[in-house]
Length: 151
Image (cartoon, rainbow, N blue to C red; front, side):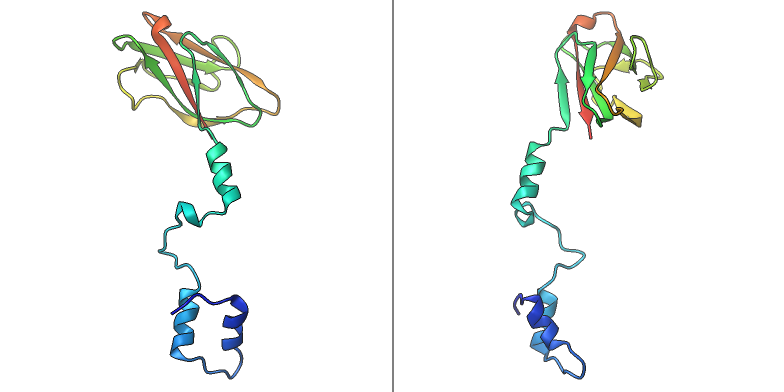
């Protein structure tokens, strides 16, 4: 059983040919099965480089309330981190201060719960760079920082 070039395989399976059992097995071994997983080393090096260059998270420093979103960015989620003891935070995300057309939390977010922070409806930033404003209401906003997850 061995992997064979496509032209060799085609030569075995022509009209009126009678491929041998070993040729049939080689044909099967020459292709990836639907159940076979694709590993990192199976990827073309240029595709590996593309994956390595992609950063899905943008950390914003504590106290940041605006962010210039790169053109074509799709916002998928955010995580508000609290360097303090954890507190309830209300969140509004929009393209203007206090705006909420991108997202508004329906209830206060407990910053000690890492499950919070998914934007339910992903938002694609327009054709030009757009300012995105985060309005956070908390007892001590100076301890809060935001990680943005993009796609």
